[in-house]
Image (cartoon, rainbow, N blue to C red):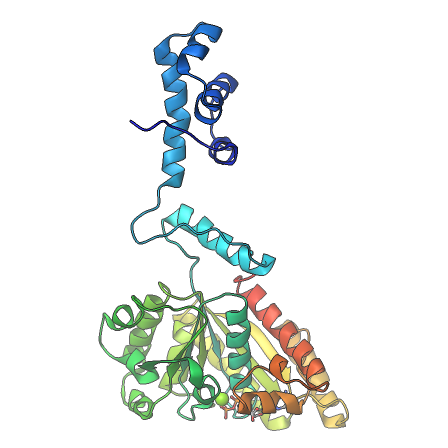
Length: 358
Ligand SMILES: Nc1ncnc2c1ncn2[C@@H]1O[C@H](COP(=O)(O)OP(=O)(O)OP(=O)(O)O)[C@@H](O)[C@H]1O
Ligand SMILES: [Mg+2]
């Protein structure tokens, strides 16, 4: 039989929450860490050999329980930046609590019934930022225009967005179970998305929701980019999501689109009460245009807390970055610095509200 031994660190970790007497700790420490014979304690403490071995067994079995690694899991030790360590610790807490090595995936849809507001810009930057924070990010491009699929092309996984409406129970499992899902994983737009409009909304939403739920085994965050019109795909996205946000320009037509969107979100919350509106994101704001300044005041007055407490200005570097398939912080120009600050304030705010970061 091999001798039972533990290091000081293992002993401290094992016994920190263990409800045992100081004498049990003293005996177990002496035998398991210092290597003293059990007979030494029997003599010194005038206890029976059975009592000594019971004290040692109590700590040893707690240690073995803690060290057990279930099949399919691996123990790793790594030095990480604090923000990444936070995520890994959350996985471990969730694992200890539920027996599952992850926290529950959070799903966010970007939606507004008006084109060109910044839905895709926001989706892509959240994906880039999530990935650099160490999150496993799935992006579903439900917009037939495929702009997010263009910008995130390098991360395409081979699965197409219309397949997320297929009646195929093992689709997600067969695709992601044996794959490295770290970083960004793009579920690319495709022409078959048009067929979804022929389905009943309820059927379409049920299919998408089922596949999105299955994704939660493999990802921390799921981002859904939607088309700029009310449709089965947009409604299904909102019925499958935990959160929705709406970028909006400070132009009259955009504000009308926002009004419609708020009504749609309120309606869909009856069918998906879990859906939380993270708010409107004022985008492409130009303080030199009096119309923008006036509309910003109108928006904040009309919707108060529903408007995010910051804005993103009209910045060429943002459009340039998306065209170059990179995040704005990779544009090496002084002009990109302010854009980077604004975008990062947005991603920090959104991930905090989604409770995927501290
Ligand atoms: N703050 C910004 N400054 C400059 N350009 C921006 C900004 N936000 C977005 N853009 C650019 O504006 C255009 C529209 O943005 P985006 O594609 O994100 O909007 P959208 O809401 O997804 O539009 P659609 O509904 O047509 O898909 C894009 O070319 C994008 O690069
Ligand atoms: Mg778009």
